[in-house]
Length: 314
Ligand code: BDR
Ligand code: CA
Picture 1 (cartoon, rainbow, N blue to C red):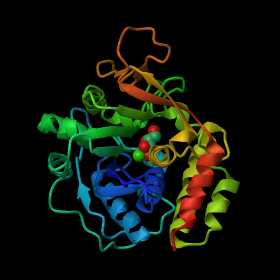
Picture 2 (cartoon, rainbow, N blue to C red):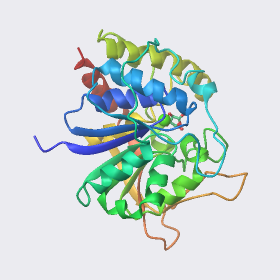
Picture 3 (spheres, rainbow, N blue to C red):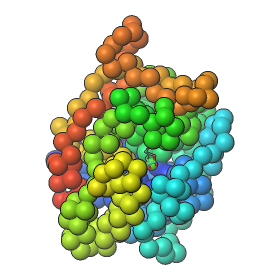
Picture 4 (tube, protein in one colour):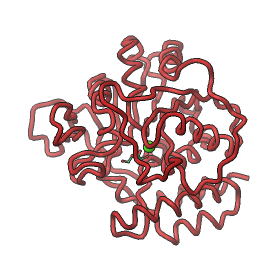
């Protein structure tokens, strides 16, 4: 097998972040250098607690966890309890985790880890607001060269916004951070609502996960049951979109997705369209593409992959 890909994961768990973590934490293809929590779906105090419980559930207690930014760079934090429940991972059975956050701040961990890396070495997976990544790039611009690629869940183009008519949640929460990241001149792969809304859970898919019968698959099914209830009403569907796991699924099996190089810019001025991602899908400007924009996915194969990987847990 080829060498595992060195990754830093930045997230705001969230049920779909949780499934992303479950997919990443037993993937032999990934070498996880650290996982950072950011305030997003719920406040930081909860996202970092959720992170510790979720990682401990997978028994990957060797992975180092960090607490990152408590609020966005410029704006006030907006959270999404109406989607994820008051805990952020409603459906999950809480316990007191033994895993603790490392003493160093998440942004400083990102800076130090990248400074110690080779050029073009580290892949960043970001499934929450981009605050930590942007803060690290602002604090230490020299780290940009160490980044191989940034794989982001965020944005929307053909699909309408899910938090305002114009914007997807992660980008809406910290549009200024998104602006810094989009301008960092490193390869960026973006999984926005155009593609994540094609990866819908349904009762049969969740039942297949529950039937695996291990503690991780059962925790996943419990969370997806809760997540599905809210989103099936919102989207008039049988379940919920698995946004965040698209990032890791692409790293494991890129052939499941269709991507197109596009220029992407983010709105940071207008209150009406704040956080809107302007994706030049049809190349109507002369702007050079700064993003590989995901627009299609084989959802059946995605769920096959997820189910196979969850089955590996004991
Ligand atoms: C994104 O926002 C959050 O609610 C989810 O965890 C996902 O990262 C979807 O818009
Ligand atoms: Ca998320």
